[in-house]
Image (cartoon, rainbow, N blue to C red; front, top):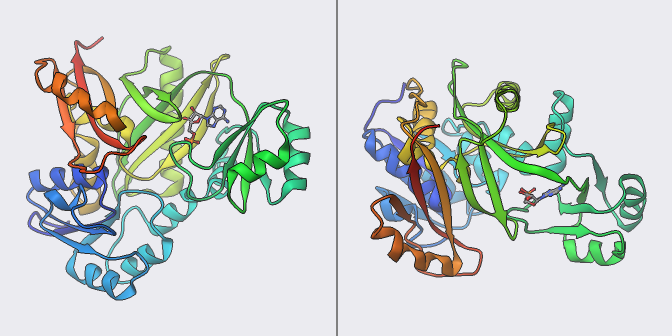
Length: 355
Ligand code: AMP
């Protein structure tokens, strides 16, 4: 066990790092952030920060030497930097897990190998492969870059009348994956924490509504039949076990109109769809991460209330004024000074009586 007073290194300076650092502070730990920019949301609330590119091996080594354990707060951290830290200090989740989930193809192959249903997919290395795959899977379909895609970036809808050439150009990557289009009933996610001894703490599945491919609203818990909810939880547990995860994992799934569950994406870190746990649960997803990586027992996921979490995206952040005056709303702002369309600036959680 790593005792309170120890230093947790967090690779990445965004809001997930910020909220993890705040949870760490509640338990008496210090956070040290590695970020590429000064005044990052995470560094603003942490004891220390290293500001350098992830490719700066000396800075990464200094960071590793200054922390007792490390984690990461977003997927697109170069694997080499994470491995450099792992050579000196324990890193949880293990770097191999990050490498699997950084790559949509590896992720989908892993899921298929462990018997988890996903959308149908094909690897796309060139235009010929794309044309052939559209012939096999049909259109509409979704073409995604294998790496560096998030919030719908690097994603192209291939409509029945689309030119494959145009889709390939718009994707903008060198390697892609074509997925069958899922006409889903809704999207859900399961967030869980797993400790080194295999113990798990699982939050109830939540429903996620997206606008322009970016999460807009999370409804916790999802209003779905119990069998669907329990199936979703079983799938998420199975994935965490097979990853041998120590940390927090979010499993995003499509619920099809027939009630089947297809896993879309994994995130081995706290997730936007788990922000409601800060205000509605005994232990937040961020505290669970701190507990898991420091070897403390996981906390209770008991929920005091149901919740609706709404992201404040881009100019939507102006809604903070209404939220801060609303006694029913909990406002969270991330301290980002630059506003950009699509940028997550904060969120609001509203609590509701438990169903
Ligand atoms: P992703 O980056 O894979 O999480 O995708 C972002 C969003 O795009 C998802 O949350 C869905 O709303 C939508 N999407 C992604 N893949 C598919 C698919 N195969 N079929 C239908 N919608 C999709």
